[in-house]
Image 1: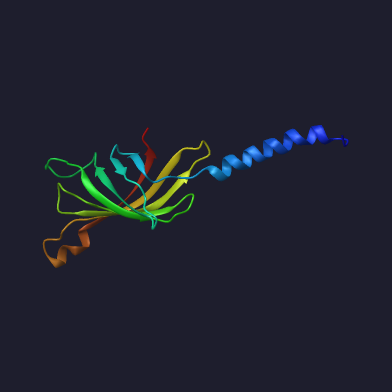
Image 2: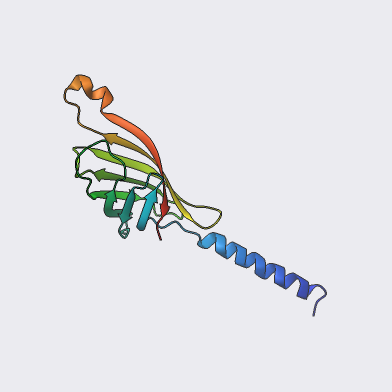
Length: 144
């Protein structure tokens, strides 16, 4: 055996295992998610072009209407930590929300979806257009 061979092998094995863990970390958009306000969404499988469908149930609302699950549809890039965009067509109110963001795998291996959203409500008249769009930020985590 060459001198030092036995001391180098364990380090090489550990290095390969560490690299394998890092490379295999991938954020999967499919599944159930919950945001920092308690709203939940369920996203189905992602097709070969990055498209997906699902549903969204908000935990916050400014309406007195019954809150029901609303459909969503979107696309994502097919990367390990993909950028994503989706739209929710609200059933309870005459509005839509568009979300855009990115799915990350944090240092603990947890998936986090960071988003910015625009909520568009109808303007009664064109002069009220300026106040018909709201903007916000949501952070979603995987629901187990």
